[in-house]
Image (cartoon, rainbow, N blue to C red; front, side, top):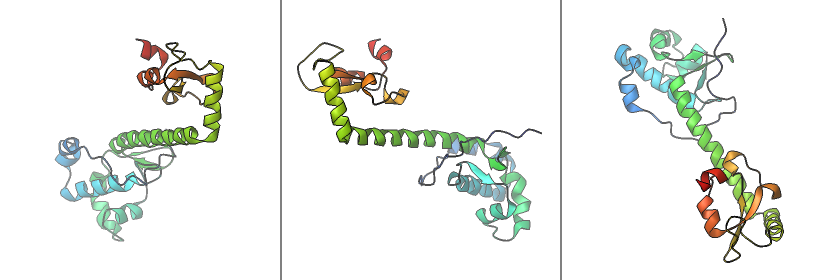
Length: 198
């Protein structure tokens, strides 16, 4: 029998995220809350929380001793086994042998994308502050005759704009940079040219 593909990528690391989103209405109205014992529900929530800081996030090892520890049963695995079916409601075993919870995975993927976006912004900020960026920007200004390629203005402060925005995979290269006046660059922002010209 084929197992499911893991619900989060192997490098999905949220161990530095102290807070895990909890959709309270979704939990309150869930089959878990309606059909399982309070002990099983509490164990489920503890497993969700534990999975947030696993690698990959939203997964746990398929190991009853580990799960007993995480849910407060310590070494008394037989007590854990009494609540196990309810506590593991919704979890899926995937091809890497780990258990994944779809709702936790949904939240983890959103957080992971935000973390990656923040990392990309930091890299870009370092590029901007570096001497290589200053030299590249000056090259672009000279190449474009110190003229905004969007409105042909030569007045005011000039900036180097990513024609294909970084968020769309645009590189910080001379081929993807153009001279823009501050007004045009601020107006275009992170939009593509087609988005901006609409």
